[in-house]
Amino acid sequence: MMSESPKDTVRAAVADVFGRPLKSLRLSVTDRCNLRCKYCMPEQDYVWLPREDVLTLEEMATLTGYFTDLGVDRVRLTGGEPLLRRDLPRLVHLLLQNLRLTDIALTTNGVLLADQAEELYEAGLHRITVSLDTLRPERFLQLTRRDEFARVMEGIESVARAGFTGLKLDTVAIRGFNDDELVALIEFGRQVQAEVRFIEYMDVGGANEWSQDKVLSQAAILTILSERYGMIEPMPERGAAPAQRFLLRDGTTFGIIPSTTTPFCAACDRSRVTADGMWYRCLYATSGTDLRQSLRAGASADEMRALIRTGWEGRRDRGAEERKALERDGLRVGGLIGIEKLREDPHLEMHARGG
Image (cartoon, rainbow, N blue to C red; front, top):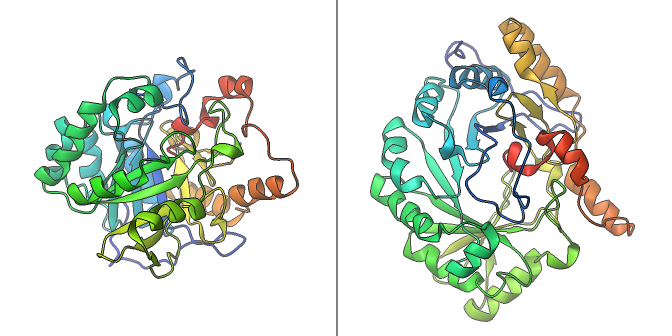
């Protein structure tokens, strides 16, 4: 079932309790991944979502249509590793039939990107973000436990060759691990015509061995970069975008996502649907709404929209701010969720809900 054309009807975005609009959807197409990054999937073995529960591409497009009817105009395809999902270009094609969508993006670890970039471009995908935490092969192996650095580099090179512009490189900045590579990553971004976004290390999930002393703050990142580049100028307010963008004197731009030290919950317009149709209104949420059950039980379009509308209008989530408050009160220690609970419910780990 496809959403109406914007010409057919105009609906204002649904707002939550704090007035935050429903505008951006992160759609996880699989919980599987071909890397085992220590900050996301540190365990070797996981409880995977049952195959029969994973949504079909048509179901994903249909659900997205209900979200766009209520205000969503941007979709980001995530995982796990989304390029592991068979026929992903077909999902892009299905989503492009929804005229309410103005932006369809993809976040990938890049391992399989060289083989699929051209087909994704031809399918109509708008933008690509590649996760890249280090430029050193030995560190890459240490972090991901997979010897795939060369393939990631090939994937990054394939983006421009396929025709894409606006490439972003996401780097989780970890004190004591890659804090000596920030300048090198900026320079690499220039070479491949990409904007680097540094992400503060977040304590999402529970198996990632997060600790406050591993967090490289936005202030620390700016200090390191200013020692090399001199004055760094903040760009205009980011609005609902997660990254604060900055400008170097030569015109190079980069971003920082300061989720840990400077939460941006007040402007957050994002929610997440897992590969099996669980809807989470916050990255930190421990409970969500099962959309798959209603969809497969034959709920009407109006009933599905009502379910989503009610869920968003009741949204009070301010997960990152709540974690920051625990830090202020001296109660923020260890991970957010215990490992045994994660094994009982695979939705609670970061790789299942799209980061």
